[in-house]
Length: 192
Image (cartoon, rainbow, N blue to C red; front, side, top):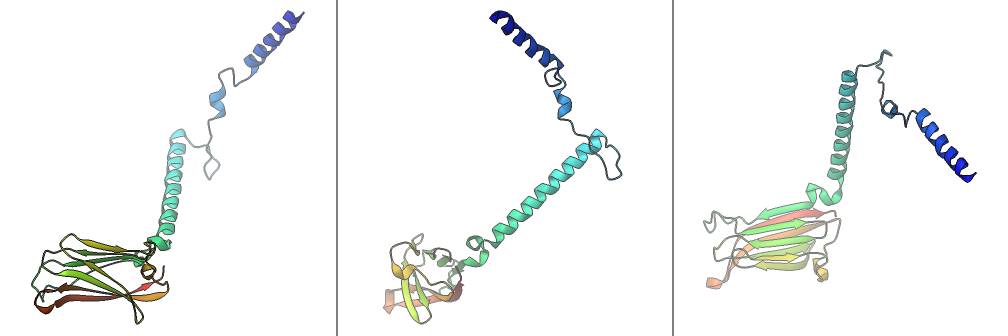
């Protein structure tokens, strides 16, 4: 008796599979979509494909514009938080290169000072907040750089937010009693 009921169960399942459109090879019709235009007419496959592609491109454009807007408004990525300056010694020592290079990123108070010219001058940077000197960086020799940031262990390198920071960069040569040239002063507002 168990055999016959088991066989009947198998037979019933097979019979159901034969009657079910999913098992009978009709499943492809379940996934097809009929598109209706604004007048209520059925669209051709080509019209439907073109409309789907157009809508996909429009959706991708909206996502791209939204992402660009969000990234551009992010404080860490805003262009006003990233500053660069060079010394100006072209008239004083006749060098065609900017001997000193300064790069400041407000978010994290990253400061990079580099000597870019084998002109015998070292590059110095004084960082000042209000009337208070915070620190000096020095790079001497072409390719040499000095670095500071808020997390490097020196409390003076952590610059205050919502304040104007003065970056006074200049070239210095110690020979013949010392010569200062190429001075550039930048006042940048630190809002990050």
